Image 1 (spheres, one colour):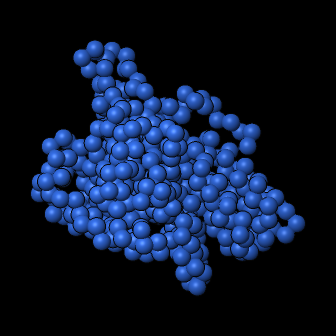
Image 2 (cartoon, one colour):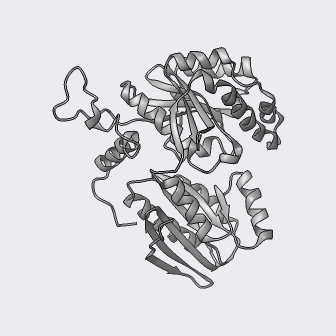
Length: 357
């Protein structure tokens, strides 16, 4: 891995504690090093600096905290929720060097706390850099074929097993759901709306979608549990967003559990937002009802989420027959695509970074 170049950003102090801030541009990371007691004053200043950093970013970024000598504070979980709402934030990761505390921290991850716990800053940055890289060795998103169906079903079953850890039986029963049938998968393949992500030529995740009103609706997305935290699901979601843009659609939607840690909060960090009940269309309400009647998914535990796409950018010289040609970025390479459109949208909304904090 290329050595990380850190630059000092700020330092804030209070009577019993302090926080130092460092930034990396490649990958985009805000490293936070608290010491002593981090009370409400320092928490507010921490959030202000994180907001300022977020406004300066044009790529997904990570907030990494390395509490080498900090006193645990109940405010941290409230603060974590605030960080997750910042623009373009990819993850909230924690470095915990002592094994007993790592066990506690990983329990908090399962309860919706940090996204990941690492034993050292070097390990944390290696993981973040891998997810940020546009050139991940051996990782490819491609169209699903009939030859993939059996392994896709295996991936879905393995991913479903994670629900057994949820105390609510209305959710944990999802671990017993059968995988999508071969006939159903064939229908998505025929519509060219089915993808798999591979690592070293082995299928480790998949996504299938369908056109629903003015967007693509993600019917299912799953990644093998032992392949988590490697950007596979994010890559699949980016591909379906690119396809929606190429089709001239305005967004991507999905339904998921409101309070399962790796459901709603995961998608919120990938530019999805929860649609309020009054904003749901008849088609979306029908989808929730279908899930409850056929899959036993209780509606009150579910939310509908949407990832809005920026309007297509017509390239100079594009023809009427092909207004979305390669120059718009909609069909660009792995480093551009919908992410490039998102960057252009953010630049249009906020053309100059705001340093006011």
